[in-house]
Amino acid sequence: MRRRWWSVAVAALLAAGTLVPASPAMAAPTFKVPFPCGQSWSGQTRSDHSPAYALDFNRTDDLGDPVVASAPGTVDRVTDLGGTSYGKYVRIDHGGGYTTYYAHLNGFNVSVGQSVGYGKVIGWVGSTGGSTGPHLHYEQRLNGNDIQVRFNGGLALYWGTKTYTSDNACSSATGSGTVNTAGADLTVRSGPGTGYAAVGSVADGTRVTIHCQTSGSTVTGTYGTSAIWDRIGAGRYIADAYVYTGHDGWIPDVPRC
Ligand SMILES: [Zn+2]
Image 1 (spheres, rainbow, N blue to C red):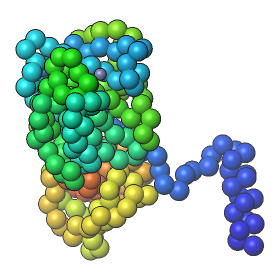
Image 2: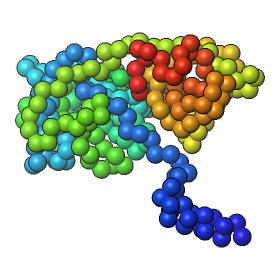
Image 3: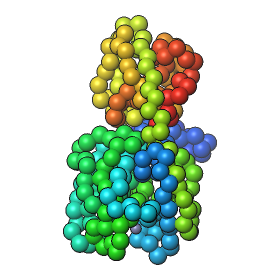
Image 4: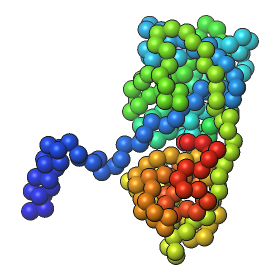
């Protein structure tokens, strides 16, 4: 009976167009230009690039310039392919199926498994692999598929060359708050929603540092109902509805994740 009920219910929901996935799709991370705050780089896209939506970055005398993580995540590849393809490259897993690639690096500044935030130097511009001159080859992928690059939600120029100015980690402001659950521990999750894995807990009354805020699943807590989630560490999110921040809603000056 249960099974039958589900199939009927699912069919009805599908018909109504309101089927909610069991595991929420994570909104795309807010990707930033992969260079330190304030730097301007020429970014080129071209239809004969491999993969097609990759961006090649250059600026004057760029050999050895630092390359930074374009969004928070976990480094899951630090690989040297020698004189072919990407050469020395780093891949960062941002969760929700999103990854970024940084290729032809001169050297590495991170290791596999390392958590990185905005602005973290992951390596240096080089010309390793199948490259004919120093540049950064950069990709955004979703579930392994090359996607059109976006910075702060805005599409990169396809096709052509454009100057991109970095606002990556320009705001180092953090917020703080106090967890108030009236007793119970508050679950820490790997993403901004109750559908994400529990990765720990914080006790009632704990003072937390809030690195950034993002919207996720709606939670009703001590301070009302809110879809805001606070990132209190790499891959660690708590529902803002249980955190006293002194602000109703978004905390001014704290960046969006
Ligand atoms: Zn390239």
